[in-house]
Length: 158
Length: 266
Ligand SMILES: Cc1cc2nc3c(=O)[nH]c(=O)nc-3n(C[C@H](O)[C@H](O)[C@H](O)COP(=O)(O)OP(=O)(O)OC[C@H]3O[C@@H](n4cnc5c(N)ncnc54)[C@H](O)[C@@H]3O)c2cc1C
Ligand code: FES
Ligand code: FES
Image (cartoon, rainbow over all chains, first blue to last red; front, side, top):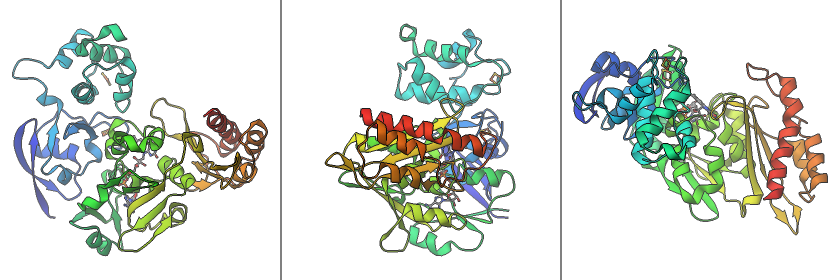
């Protein structure tokens, strides 16, 4: 079975690994590259736990061909913190108890990051929309929305 | 076992299609089968820039089949299509899912195709001259021809075109049904009414009952009532986890009425 070399940028660093024929990006990141932050929830596009950013936009890594990441910039939740310093979204998620089991959290975080990167002062409605492709089965959405509002530093608009 | 072949041009991709091959757009439908070990034998991709080309000006808009829902939403000149693109999946799906893939996505998907059929859009096929009505391609869903681009006539005013999607889960549930209406008027009378439905048959389809009721009339309460009464005529909706066929037919008129009333208000 042919393996294809895939060179891409992962959280700002040049990375390369071999992708199997038809392998999805989620499996590739977890098994071949060793980034375990994107989660396998359904493999069907329904849950968003596998969300990663490709060239800054949220994509479902379970529905992306690994080889399609060649030459692209991929960001995952494991790239959010700078050394021991958490990203302000991670801080806000902690403060607001926005993670219970935490399975949806990496996907939520990167979806929220993509939103704040292009819209630093989102309204509550814009946050709900931006997270609408990410399911949470235990925390409930309110603390998550509150955390994103906190991170955006704009609670007044809520 | 699925293999993936990538070609620089659409012409080469078209030649590579054939037995066991599916063209790979955004993959939001195809990859589910691949992940389940049930994918096509061959996935054919193309990096042809023509696939993602957008010509948004003029009376007829031309969009490459590989244009995503998110790209449509980012084009100010495509505002008439924004209410449709916005309602397809969540942000991730809109960043990935393409126009070409929406034409052949199975029930209950295909909301964009519904709008395209109502607008009388035409599909440019790879390696072939001319363009064919999108509506015609719905009959070839089992073996879709490779679509290079879609040509969409731009409505002359916001009142001419409307789209409505009904889903249970907000804001990103799939369709109980979707309906689009294109109602050009001459001297206050509707001439060339086109109504299209999604999730109301094996594929997105025209709603001839409603079209007949609208044709030649004014978009007023009486015409709208007649169209609503005839809405379900000729529709053959499936029963699935979202709704029964009976329910879909029962509510078709209600939702068509809401759409038409919104268009009447302008
Ligand atoms: C969570 C989720 C929610 C969704 N919600 C919606 C929704 O609300 N409304 C909706 O309509 N859809 C929805 N979808 C379905 C799907 O994402 C969209 O229909 C999308 O537009 C499909 O495009 P794609 O490029 O990803 O298709 P692909 O998976 O790439 O392809 C789908 C089919 O089209 C064929 N195809 C693709 N491109 C071409 C081409 N250029 N020429 C010929 N054949 C082609 C493929 O061979 C395949 O048969 C959803 C999917 C998911 C996972
Ligand atoms: S694992 Fe990708 S959407 Fe659920
Ligand atoms: S915290 Fe458990 S699914 Fe969201």
